[in-house]
Length: 229
Image (cartoon, one colour):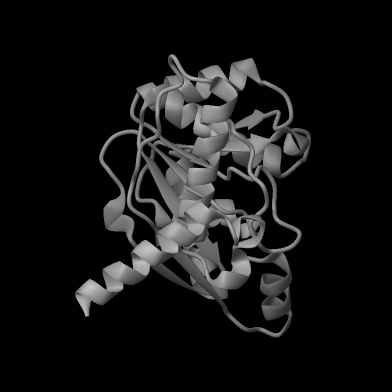
């Protein structure tokens, strides 16, 4: 019930303050999966509730908001939970795995925090761990237009922000079993971020802009466009 009410409120507010373009939602699989997005601003979490037509969303929130008078109540309302982003939070990990096993959709930003540069930052391995541990597909999401600076300026001038949400095709990652854990997680994390980066305009690619895997994905995209022409 909490998520339903929150979704209604989010949709009303976003339709007032923004023009939201969503593409690729047909790529979302049935059942449980992991949705990984870049993180530009405070609107990102609300926007994904707006875009995803599911009521079993799993969205951890940074522990720094646990004692905030508004966010603490909001997180409880939507069935969320808090997570320590900098240490192994065993309780939160178990909660995520349990909900994924029950078919939920895990929504998380691999970067762990909003990007001050408004471009991709080097990501943490947490998302890759859950994807490798569960074997569930990852759906990459590229967000633009949610930068706090841009949204605030538009609000001050009574302009609607243009926000774009692009969902890529789902992919799976290798299991951690029988492999070098750190190396496998690092490679998987890079794959996730390059998949996101390939859907972003150049100025948003940041830390991964020159990575060979991202360049490979961009080249594949160009070849695909050529075949469709």
